[in-house]
Image (tube, rainbow, N blue to C red; front, top):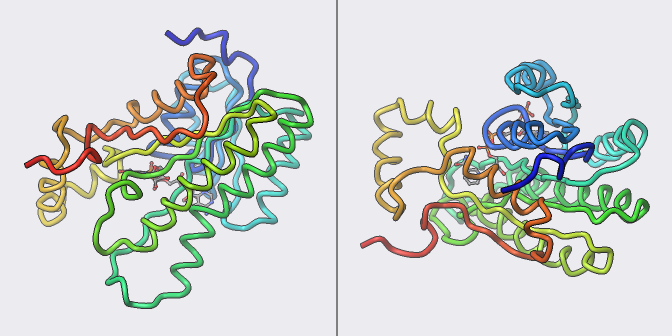
Length: 260
Ligand SMILES: NC(=O)c1ccc[n+]([C@@H]2O[C@H](COP(=O)([O-])OP(=O)(O)OC[C@H]3O[C@@H](n4cnc5c(N)ncnc54)[C@H](OP(=O)(O)O)[C@@H]3O)[C@@H](O)[C@H]2O)c1
């Protein structure tokens, strides 16, 4: 079991924190006594999300667009000024891109998807590592990837390639940061029952699509946001102190292979 003291006083920054997986990650770290910086664009949504966290006296909201490098610079300026440290960075932000045939060239979509899913994580890692190395903190970086990078699907080329890039970038960075005792790992969710996914399932057409996907999950259900956050907290804890460069699928066996 992870002891509460383990995260007491530690500073944890979570991107994409106002809903879904990101919010649950914030909730778990807050319950374990960490100071949690919740980052997303819409401040009202962030504040509302913070209100749903029971132990929120050490939760802080920060609004910025993480696809813009200068905004990331300002974010880490704020972290440095207010907390002087960072112990855990969770790059949870990831935008799903619309379905398109692979040969329909959409340059803007490529750029947007890479800025949001890859470059934002890269710049956040650089800035967080700068503070960690400066403080000699044995910090942790968790990047939230996707089962799409492990078992590819038709029609989501931009998203799939961006998540594959995130997985590989995490392993390269793990190699670079190991000499500073900073660990970098990936949590790779399969289909997860976030509010958005549950909302989608109310539409009969979407439900039919989801039903097919459900049959492909050996453990027979979608992940809960708690399942994903559990893995993030575990990899951030000292229980995982010798794990770096790992890609941990949390997908009920979805990426093992065919179910029939
Ligand atoms: N849900 C799934 O089934 C599933 C499966 C596999 C992998 N994943 C991965 O898990 C992660 C979380 O997924 P989720 O479904 O929980 O996410 P989500 O519900 O789509 O939430 C996205 C979050 O990111 C914020 N955000 C979006 N664009 C941003 C930007 N440019 N700058 C700053 N914040 C931004 C959103 O708030 P604002 O709009 O206010 O900015 C929101 O808080 C993602 O990396 C996703 O790819 C999810």
